[in-house]
Image (cartoon, rainbow over all chains, first blue to last red; front, top):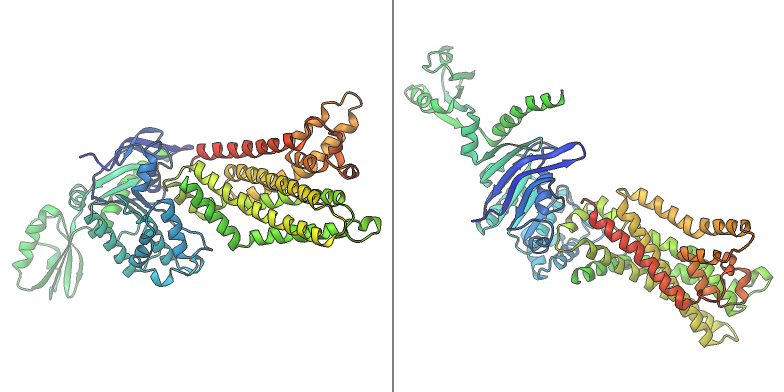
Length: 311
Length: 274
């Protein structure tokens, strides 16, 4: 099956800056891909390339079976939803009017407007001017706008900024719903907590280059980050620091009611056996590296290279 | 095509909502009625004098006001949406940049058209009702030509405003440039031409043709050339007489003055990065 998004060695310059550097990317249908990276890493540029707002200097971009600019654009754009970073609308219009305007432009049935307002929880505020909306409400209106016409591909640039935790969870539930219906979702974020359960793969960008890509298991395998094990119990004394077969297993924190270990992935079971054999241990908690840890790890790996480029 | 109408509809409704239509119509109507009534004040009289004087004064008013109103109405058409962030969204919708600009032109053109017809129309009706000894047919003809040419002049400057709006990235810059354009076409051009007229001693046959390089002069020619009484107030346009300087020729020239900047604006808009 042909991928929904296909980047082949895509390079994009902006003046002297290289926004995207020889990026390969392939996203298949029904996949949720997170684009991660700090400011200027190339997340937004990648989205703009997919949208056909800018053309690559080198390499080729194909979206839903064609180049996003040119003759394919018209059909593509009716099957695509986009929520820009810091979305804004016509302040003088009401939420309903804004959505109705975009629905007409996308040639979508009017009935969808009320349906979507209901879905993002803006029904009661639909007739108020957008000017009076909070940041979160604007963001939800932006999402409703992106969902017009049941798109097959959804691009969401920093979708959860300004949303409270409950609204963020609702938002990700919506994303999961869409994916279950076969919609491909690309979302960029630097707010990592909460996103992990909802994504299939993550692409970590730095300086326009791909630092890492894969699902959580692949990223963990590549990073080889130690996992954290909390052992609770009345573990007194200093003996806990020592006496392990594997020197890589370290007690990083020792409190009265427990010890925290940093354990390499391949030594996980050895450590667990050791701990379960000890009658003083009452409970064991396993914390594999989170997306946030992985992100920090991969971004840091990039840093020395960047310094080298500058000097 | 449907996208063009959707955009035009929104622009026009915005124009009604933020009272542009009402404001322009009221200003034009009030000034026009005032001019019709106090047109003779300079010569010590009061009340309606003659149709020729009134129409001449009205077109002198229009030549200053209409371009200014058109520029103010449309200078932020693109750059305003760019600053607000809505342009980015619009460009990802299934409509071409050409449709976007044409839709806006249709909407803004309609706002200006409706307001001008209302404003000058009201003035015409007031004159027809209130003034004595006016030939209604002549009045209707004169006012009709004034309204038509005013609307065309407005559209010319809306097109100029778009050309500015797609060429800059800041609203403030667009506003500044709009004022420069107004200044050049409405004030400076006249002075330049006058200086040229004085300095060229002989064989200045080609001078009248220079008037066609300025849409506001075309507008003046359309409205003033027909009146004997207008000679005293028509300024430099009085150098053009007869021949090619008839409304039937000048109105197509005004159309060209709409199409050229609008076409350039569309080209620029299509070829610039998002």
